[in-house]
Structures are given as structure tokens and as C-alpha cells.
Amino acid sequence: MTEIIDNRAHRIRTMKEIIRHLHQGGDPAEVRDRLKTLVQKTDASEIAAMEQELINEGMSVDEVRSMCDLHAQVLNEIRAQPKSQEVPPGHPVDTFRRENEALRRPIGEMKAAIAEARGRPEGNLWQEVVNRMRQALNDLMDVDKHYLRKENLLFSRLERHGIVGPSKVMWAKHDEARQLLKRVERILSQEDLTVDGLIQLCDTTVEPALEEVEGMIFKEENILFPMALDTLTDQDWGEIWRDSPQYGWCLVEPREGYRPSEPAGPLPAAEVSAERSLPFPTGNLTLDQLKAIFATLPVDLTFIDAEDRVRYFSEGPERIFMRSKAILGRKVQNCHPPGSVHVVDKILSDFRSGGQSVAEFWINFRGEFVHIRYFAVRDPDGQYLGTLEVTQDLTHLRALEGERRLLQYDTSREEDDNPMEDAP
Image (tube, rainbow, N blue to C red; front, side, top):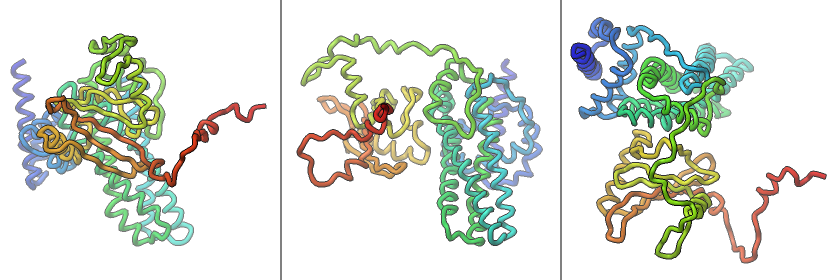
């Protein structure tokens, strides 16, 4: 057993040395034979452990991300294709794999259209090429649902088992792909797009975007999914399966067949009787009343405790940002893209020190004007207890003008939703 452990540790150390060499500008050809021998004995968990150790030793997520494609290219060339681990139809990994297979179709269509665009077609043929690229891009944009399920459900379960580094690196790569695809979408939507403009777009953005998506498919199939199947429990997979529908599916629907284990019971902390009144300085509320109030408030609430862990989020009827129970107990830094973690850390540090108590942002999100505020939560003695995030859609409120002094109910939505209104 000691020999196996030592060999594993040796492989990880050697891979780190080689990857650092590549990162410092070393020629991949110089280490190819060495890596070939090494990687043939390496499993997905060792590659993940290597990335984790590099981060633990001080290499930033951005640095690991920047060399991710380089070492993945070398690994792709020399690493034997791992034997696919069987899962039942409808299992989360089965759905992820089928989505990857579905994504290969628009990737292929986009590549074919790029090749035709380089031939500088004219007239109707030109417009046909552009339309094909727009349709393929529309399908590729669906990859966001695939990434969201990974980030919010799969990564959070891996964190429970101490696997954090590879998730951060992958999330950063997701954001690169998203940015490239959005840029392609913005330029392809232009009606006055020229042949030269399209060819330039293919060189600078479309082909790099396709490489990002294809590279992530390789990393998932060869590293992430094997590692997750070796690590996560049946309970973990059941939770992922139950929480997945709120994020949607990428190009394909899950198959029937997978039956998850029964969910775990409620946490021991929830011992307050629903009928018992909870005393507050300004009155009393039962637990049922309190839950109903939080669910009725026209804002989304999320509470992060003094240890930076997510402890609660409200469940309103129309949440702006999706939440799943997978984030409960999760470090809030791991709930954000790596590129924005420094902002999260700055807010929490300023709140914890007492230097600040409120931070606010406003953004345009899917056609809505969204106001996001963070409040430092303190006890009567000023001790920091955590941070409360309050998110609200202000689109309707910003459109209000004049005054309304007479009672008037806004029933238009209710009337639209009433299927019996026009019934005889």
C-alpha cells in the first residue's frame, strides 16, 4: 500500500514539475515522452490533485487556467482514452455526456460554415452561410445550462469531498467560453456584416470559442466525470438529479431509467414547532408565518454567516438568480465565478472589520433592471454575524410616474392567467 501511495505522490509531483516547465515556456516536445509514460498510469483524481496542489502552493486560479489548455493538449495527445464508466440512463452523468454529444453537432456545423465563409461566397450563398452560423450559434448558446448545472450542483458536491481547485479552474474556462460566444452573437446579429468582417470574426472569436467548448468536453469526459463518479455518493447524485431541472437542459432531455436514493431527512436544527410563536422585539410570529412572509417579500434574500458560508436563501415565486439547496453550507466564494471572487472577499473583509456596512450594485439582467445590495448583519454589540444579500427587480418601480391615491388592483396578469374567463 505504501508503495502505491508513494508512486501516486511521485506521479503528482512529477506532473507538477512538468506542467510548471510548460507554463514557463518549455517546449512540449521535450517532455512528451516523459509525460507519455507517466500519464498512462495516471487517473483523473491525480490530475485533479495536481491542479489542487498547484493552487495550494500559491499559483493563482488564473495562472492554472492559462496553462490549462496547454497541458490538456499534451495530455490529449498521449493519454489513452479512459474506459467509460457505465451509469444508468437518466443519471446526471449520462445527461451531461449526451449533452456533450449533442453539442458536437452545432460545433461541426459552425466549422463547416467557417470553411465556406473563407471561400468568400456571394449573394444568396453568402446569406445562407451567415444564417447557418447564426442557427449553429443559437444551439451552442444552450451550453450555458450545462455549465450552470456543473457550477451550482456538481462542483458543490465535489467541494464536500475536498475537491475545490479543479472546479475553480473549470468555472474560469466556462466564463471564457461564455464571453467568446456572446461576442460572436453580438457581431453575427449585425445586418451589415461583411465578408471580411465575418472572416476576421472567425479568426479572432468563433474558432477560439469552439476550441473552448471542445476543450471543456474533453476535460469533462476524461477528468471531471471519472473523478466525480469515483468520489460522489449515491446521495450526492440523487441531490444533483433532483435539483437539475431548475437549471434546464442543453439540447437534449434526460432519459428515463435512473432512480435516485431517497433524500436525507431534515436537518436536526429544524426543531421549532410550526405553531410555536417566536418572540421578536416588536411582536411574535409562528414559524409558518415567518416562512410565508419570507416567501412573499418582493425581494430575494440570501444570508452568509460569519464564516462566509451560505446558511439561508428565500424561496419566492420568481427568483431573479437561481438557487439550489446545494449552496447551503458552501463557502460563498465558491458560489461565484473566479473572476469576481476578489470583489466578494473585499465586501466581506470591509463588513467584518466594520469599515463598511452596505454595498450595492445595479445591472441589466435578461431585460430586467436588477438592484443588488449587501448589508452587514451585526448583533446589538456590533459583533459581525454575517452578510445579507437583497436582490430586487426594479423594472416596474422605475417605470412608475405621477401618483396613485385611489385603490386599484393590478389584475392584468391574473386575468391573462385565468383559463376559465372566456368559458361559456
